[in-house]
Length: 370
View 1 (cartoon, one colour):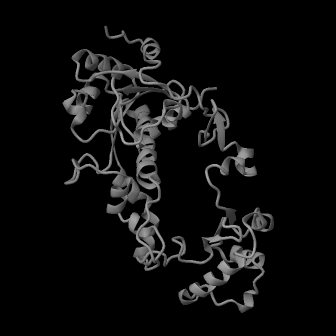
View 2: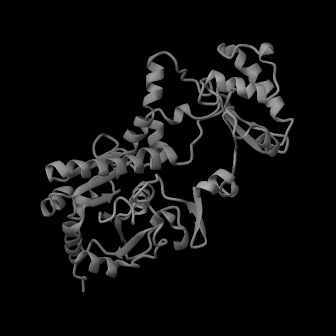
View 3: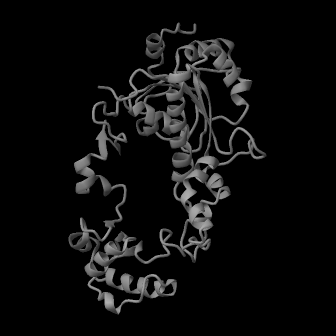
């Protein structure tokens, strides 16, 4: 059992962030992912030792200079045998290399050609540089994130790069593969982080349209505005998170805090939220984080300790599910989601540039470039 995507051949062009993450997801689920690397080192902004390049796990690497005609010819031999190609260059770069979608689909009409950009393949910003923070700023997501008395807070690069980018690219690729079973034809998937991040905001646009969302940060239920959906500091300086949105769960939270619900102001009144937050904060500071865990964890109060990446793997729930594992002496998240018959797995660890390329060419039936 090598995962549900066993037998799928994927070419991953050199990129950072969402394209390698998408390739990792596909490799974790069994796809044969061949990463095309540049022959020489390139400053991509976030260098890591090869051992810790976890987005490269499960892949083999082929080092090619795509400015050399022989390398381009080799790429077409690979494209002919591939199911999927994913790339993350600015619009037009693959065309200038002679490897654009028109040429690739002419060589392999069944190819799914996934294109990952920040701004998309069209539009006035298409050629502009940018990163996660810029794409989520433009679509309304960044404006909504952060406490009300603070500037917008970047949510790591989870919303643009990985949520709105890699996951939408993966969904698009898999959807195109499903459609290919009916039509026999490949197609181009234009996955833009600005589009994906905007799509992630669908529920909040709906709430705003219905008059149920305030555009001021920290003034809504799930943006730290509501005192029952927030984090609190404990006696020992640790933090806990509560998310008791539903009334019955809110009642459990109030009970666990030892507060008299009859003495509390109505939580339906926004004007009472500041007073409620002060009461909750004062009560949480009376115990340590571990003491609150002993009292509330596993209850319907919608409670969890705020754990660091160092702490998380040792939590009983994370450990029991093996959500974070140690593989080749490196702590890392396990493949997700899970499958009953064809589970994914962490296969070979990240490889150095060019490692495994010759083997991949042989497996794909492609002659090595001299």
